Image 1 (cartoon, rainbow, N blue to C red):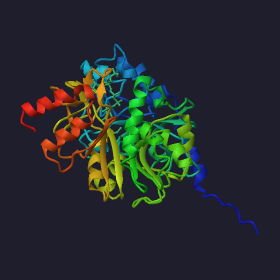
Image 2 (image 1 turned 180 degrees about the vertical axis):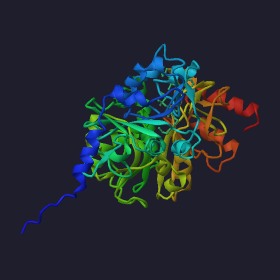
Image 3 (image 1 turned 180 degrees about the horizontal axis):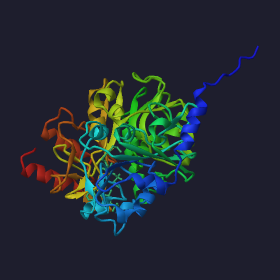
Image 4 (image 1 turned 30 degrees about the horizontal axis):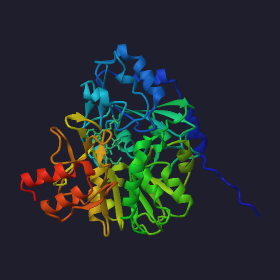
Length: 447
Ligand code: COA
């Protein structure tokens, strides 16, 4: 006998509740007041429709502060004429906010990615409004934060008012990734395409050989059964291309992009050896294309979690053979790693680099890796340097650094004295700079 699928009585009322909250973007943003502090959904979940409506009200608003990490696409509140009306606080500087930060038209908060949500939870930054971008509610009334869960969920929960752009194109991602419709104050229906981040096929062809040699060198450090953290960009993608002969890899990472799909489909990323969350990819968000968004939609292979959990070094360290792969602007001969500025020019942010470098260092069999091309600007600048540029920001200290990888090889620095570090780093420097690096080291009694 067929069993009737009896749906809970509350479903109808949930949907009615949802319908009563639907307003236009212009109506929704009327609740925003001067001096409000506002969380904006980060990364590819940037809720453009609501933000545009808020910006249309600029003449009624003064000193509204906007908080988010990286975001993809133009930032309307940084357009000319917005000064005084809106202040952007970046917890990670992207290409769309870099000029404004460097010109003093936007602010930058240096913070570990693991601690961004805690700024809001602790009340250090008391949020008035959160602007989020979610999937439509399911039959139980839950909307998914979709492509960006980690940096937004905790903050939104602390905000006085939540305005959601509800979009059928937002993938329904699983894990600790939902908000119930009853918690949302205003819902703005949307069918815009979710923003995409072009993949590293766009890498400068002159650099592609360098990146692939770096990828090959890193792949040599990755053992079967390892769990990986991979950032975005040319280096992580180059590494992924060299992993097709590995077995039983896992992923625990702040973010991932399209490159993992092929390795999952080839049966290389199985997550079966993971010591926490076995069988699952764990992440805070994704940055990629529609192909990736289709892959993560309703996919039980992947669990999204809050960044304070995913990036907690103690959680990361519970993974067996945790390999963290991060990049840098420059590394000095003692092993100090600058990653967030070019001299005094603020460039990006601390991000999750040190969270994962520390987590991997404490993992059984773990390997924290800093990978970078040996030079910048067409081989005119060495990225292995005698000393960091004036004003450079150290993200990974010389106490934290373990492996440094360039296209010329692998330097293993952990536990080594400065004399040994110099030799290791000169070994992987570009040939044009080896002599001057060694001369500096000799002159300064490092060797
Ligand atoms: N001196 C002068 N300029 C330099 C330089 C140096 N030592 N190193 C890089 N640059 C320039 C490059 O020439 C390039 O300039 P261009 O845009 O005019 O071509 C620019 O800086 C960016 O360099 P690139 O090597 O392309 O950077 P990237 O996109 O690979 O990013 C980091 C590298 C370090 C900025 C990035 O990984 C980062 O922000 N890391 C910190 C946070 C982190 O690691 N998070 C965890 C993983 S996402």
